[in-house]
Each structure stands twice: as structure tokens, then as C-alpha cells.
Length: 211
Image (cartoon, rainbow, N blue to C red; front, side, top):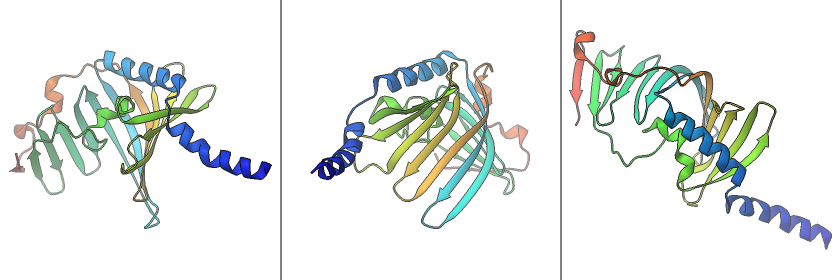
């Protein structure tokens, strides 16, 4: 009988965790989010690891990103993306071409709106403080919608200053994206021109306007 109760407890525990918000986790996340909102920008150098469990493959790239509100400039080895809050420019140096698009402002996915890292917990997710260490917090976010493509988002946040250490994005299709932050700064003053593509700075580039 005790064994039966133990099994029932183990089965029910994850449901209980997913069904409620952890007040301490919310407090940490609120501090994390408000600190970013009060800063002129967020600048990060990172390593991004993409693991495909089904294909048993892994890919690692390094890059840097500058964010100010929803605007950003993302620099990768073979791609630079600017977004000024309305239009997006994707520049491929090897192909010498730039594609201009106008993204859907209602798309809050991490891929389309990187700044959602700092606010995604506020809507559609339950939070849980998994572990508190001497120098960091480990927090899991679970989607409230069962059919969501996400299984879990995991953030590691530094303490006492709420800097981002890592961000893990685990999907149902077997893909896990992990962002490992190497350098994190909230001090850079971001000029609006940093988030736009200027053709005169890139000679002999083909411009493909998809707006």
C-alpha cells in the first residue's frame, strides 16, 4: 500500500509543480526583467548549442547581440541581422545579399524576438525555482498550453546581480537550444542607427525587399 501511495505521489508531483507559480521564482524573474528594462541596452557575447535528439547531432556557433527594447543587432559568423522595431535586414556576407522583411509584431517567439528572454515568463508559463546556489538561481518555465511546441525553458541567473548566465529552450521535436552567455553588459548606450542596415556601408550587395 505504501508503495502504491509513493507511485501516485511521483506521478502527481510534476502536475502540481506545473499547475502553480513559485513566488520566489517570480520575484527573481521580476527583478531580472525590471533590471533589463531600466538599462539603456543589453549586450551579450554567447555560444549557442543546438542539439537534435532525433538526428543525434549537435551544432555550436558563437555570436553577439545588442538589444534595446525589441530592437536588436545579431552578429553570427555568416549572418548579421538588424531589427529596428519594424523592419528586419538579414545580411549574408558570403552571398553578398541582404533580405528585408517586416516581421509579425505578434510573434513573441525567441527566434523572432530575442528580447522575449526577459519577459516570456509573464504570459503563458508557470515558473519554478529548481535550485539556488551560492552564486546563481536555476529556474524552469513550463508552458500552460499542453499543445505548446515547448517542453521547458530553463534560465540560470546570476546572483546577487541578476545577469543571464544561460538560457535553454527545449522543444517537443527533440531539439534543444542552449545559449551560454560569455559576456553580459547593461551599460552600452545604443544609438537607433545601430539597429538598421545602411547600404552605403556595404558595397556591391544585392538587396532583396520582401516587405
